Amino acid sequence: MAQRRLPAVVARMWGRETSARHGPRPSLELGSIVDAAIRIADREGLVGVTMGSVASQLGVAAMSLYRYVGSKDELLVMMADAAAPEPPALDGRAWRDYLSEWTRANRDFLLARPWLLALDQRTPPTGPRLLRWLDRALAALAGTGLAHGARINIATVLSGYATQQAALAHALSAGPAATDDSIAGLTEYGEILGQVLDADRYPELTRAVGGDALGAAEEWIDDADFTFGLGLLLDGIEALVARQVHD
Image 1: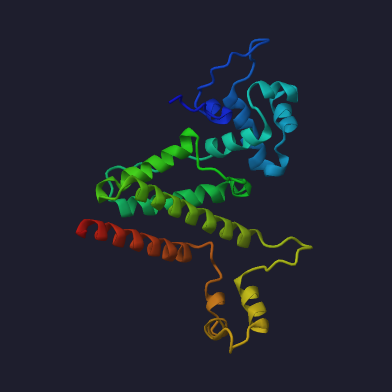
Image 2 (image 1 turned 90 degrees about the vertical axis):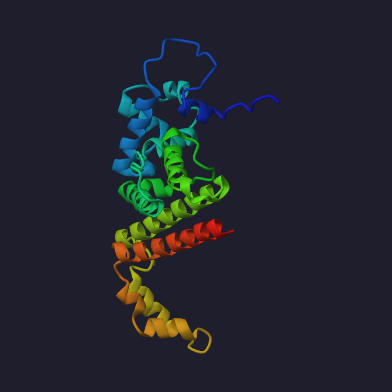
């Protein structure tokens, strides 16, 4: 069976392009283009990233970038991979300790670069940096007896949790725009719910709101809520591992 041709953006990220480039000798490196785009995103958010703005940062014409990057969408995929730091070192740690740090580090780099949260990532990671994150999570679980499919599912759940928590923390810390009708925080959320909830139809939620459960959890960006949810996930993984051992 013939090997499937790599998508162009994957081939570029891994240095596997096979088609020869015609024309003048390249004056740029793909890495410098991606780095320039990341600098703009760090400064202005994704709204500031255009082929024109990246070209201007590099002092070249916008059309010249298309010798290295097929489209802005391709550039965004490369940015998402290059903007991620290296994953934490495994260093022989037990899987639970490592995955706790792995998930926290995943959340933290998304919070450090919130423009990553705005990317519409509809496909699994394909770049070298993000795939190292996946590889390290699989390696941490290697001694558990879990099949590779289960280990990949675990990494997917934990990375999804990190993303969801980063998005929530960023939204609450940023607050609503001046003309926005958004909810400013959990205390305000509780006040709104207190006005609309019917105790007969929502008995437990009404009691929770009346007991100021949301106000007590106002500081979502702190570690307490993140650690609580992460502990639940890790407990579930531990139960799965234990069941694997006894089956």
